[in-house]
Every structure is written in C-alpha cells, then in structure tokens.
Image 1 (tube, rainbow, N blue to C red):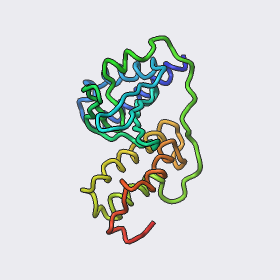
Image 2: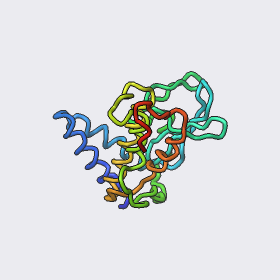
Image 3: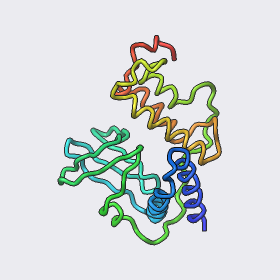
Length: 199
C-alpha cells in the first residue's frame, strides 16, 4: 500500500511536469508509470565499470547514477557512457534509463520500505546550495552558460527543487543540496571568472 502511494505521488509529479512542458503528456504517461513500477520493484543497486575508469552505481530507488574513481564519488552526468564490456549506459535528466540488465538485476518481489532520503533538512537562508552552485559555475549573470559545468549544475538544481516539491519542504535542504555543497569544492565546478567573487 505504501509502495502504491509512492507510485501515485511519482505519477502525479511527473504528469504535472509533462503537462507544463508539452500537450503530448498523455503519450509519456505510460512510460513514466512503467519507470515508477520498475523503481518500486527495485531492491539491489546495479553497478558496472566505465571503459575510461571508475565504477558506476545506480541507486535502485532513484535511478541516480554515481561514479567512484580513486575512492571519490561524483554524479554521472547526462549522456551515453561506455562500459568496459562494450555495453552502454544512458543517463537522462540526472537519472539512468534502465536497460535490460539493470531491470533483471532487480528483484520483482516488493522490497521493504526504504529509508527515505534526507528531506526536510536545515532551513535555507538566502540561496540554496544548488542555486549557489549554478551561480558559481554559470556566472552571476549567466556569463559562463557555455561552460562544461553549467548544465550539470542546472541538473542538480532541478533535482533539488524536485525533492523539495515531492517532500513538501520548500526552503529546506535535501539530499541533492548536500551533493551541491560537495560539488562547490570540486574543481569541475570552477568559479566563473565573471562572478566578481560574490558568494
């Protein structure tokens, strides 16, 4: 019953987002529902090795991919990634598009209710951690929107806002907020030179 409630909540959120973007939302609804069912049935995370190095882990509840290189874990960004055995892993909007192997690795029986992600964390005063990351990577006035780090920063901001909406905790930190705090110290998200040093 709790799993069905989670699926319903996911469906309503994705349906609203699809309607806002396109009148073709009814076409995407079955795909979103299938994805929600696949997530609800998941029990074990999936992992594989990237051809260029690093081990990928896919969270069974969120389909968020992370890659670990030399003990350091970071987000795996959008795109098609080659695995060391020649297979491909596709990431769209910060989440893995489950392939046949990932779906087979997940048990079909209903899993125990997972511990929820950190939601309703600390109150946010001023800009959120992910808003600060976008400002850092893209520039205060968008001066660095073409930089390699700007799009991933926006993806993290979208994920942070989605978590706040789904948890009903606007103005509070989330799981992704913590990832944005980590990302602010990552060289990949170097400060845009035109931010003028404003925090």
